[in-house]
Amino acid sequence: MHGLTRQQTINYRMVRTLAEANKDLPMKRKVDTYEYESLEQCIKTDQVPANHIAELFTDKEFYKWYSDRNFKDK
Image (cartoon, rainbow, N blue to C red; front, side):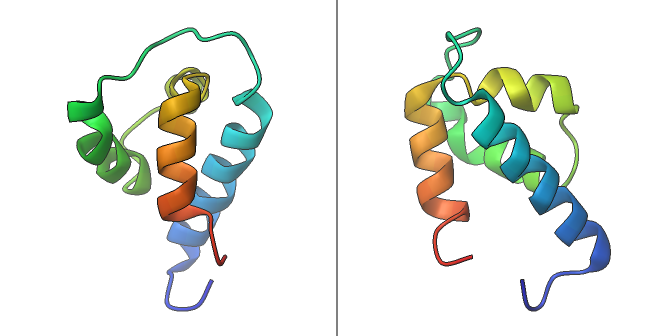
């Protein structure tokens, strides 16, 4: 994770862990596609609490979209 600050690295690892741990759970919240990019930025800048991130990643479509953009090649 080159080029990330220490805090960004910690946030990335937490988000990735939450994503992997919650992706196969029953959906708790459906994320509308128009929210994807704004939520991505809020998640990446540590503005979303961990319990909300966990709920967001129960939406399989959002999980796939986010992971394709943020977890590939890392």
